[in-house]
Length: 461
Image (cartoon, rainbow, N blue to C red; front, side, top):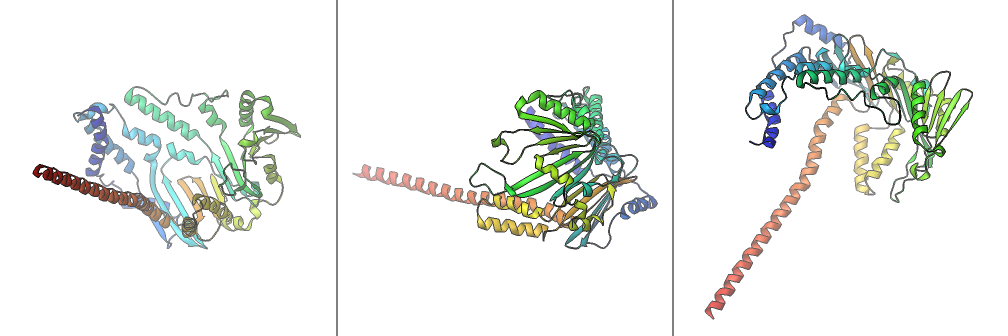
């Protein structure tokens, strides 16, 4: 068996061993199991379209032990073991990911207005670590309602804390160093960011803080796409804010002033507010975008917008909190957490533009796509979601057109449908090719027979 064949065989052997050696049942007394269930159940809705509870307490510990056992067996197999690095600590890797203190997961969906209220809770024993730290730090009151304008079609607030990502890279690198004698990830965090004095680790530290962003459509503007068949897409304004952005602004400014020609930007400070205006060539802006970066000295707030006009939405007009759709849904959600997202009913119109564009002018396909959208999303309605770190886990709640039940059904059906869509034409082509091959064989056979008859006739003469 050559090297290529052994490498192909390795995943097959590993998956086969996993399949025939199931995990044992974790020994958990009834009182502990009930306490875990109660911990999750209190965050969920009963009597809806969907309810699921999964107790995984200790499962990752068992999985790590079983995976370690399989790994050792594979290391001993002739022709395969030489391809596997020695000394891997499988349980150590799972621990670095933070999976060993995840105890249970619960989901529920209950009918609400035109859609569903979906709730999710992940019970955690001890402090969050690894991937679980990416959900942010301590919950704080949401501010997106007072930040975004009432006409925003999309708004998001996010507690950005990437220390967990740094710890994850460092932890996995340490595990690799113990296992294979080297840490291939050690240089990732120290990698310099081109055009700045930062490395990756310092950049992640700098980005820590509350981010908010929103999108507003300007229907009086049309993006100038250099394609005669392109759909008419309204102007899209994006505004992003970083609460602790003074240092970020300094690095952005340094990068631009060091790498762009002098006529590519202008900078002006008025009443403690500095604006850095980027001048892009017209052919690169779709006839709409003119990026601007704004820094307010007194508050340290950094704002990045697609064009100067977009900044008006920060101070002019009503706030998103006064929007009836936003208010109706947000009033039923927790008021503080680590992340929040809102999509207005008007977003459906914007989505339909791209859906129709994808049909490439085919009316039948466009109709099918519209019907699929109607099936998935129902009538246009607001969608909101939030998540929050709690002392014993991570909680999420959303109001959406789809329940977890429907989402899971699509997850099962979609691959089958896609497979059918791919296999059907392949099968049809295979049948056509088979018929053509058969016809060629018959023609060749007739040609041989005719040649034989002609030869026989010539011999008789």
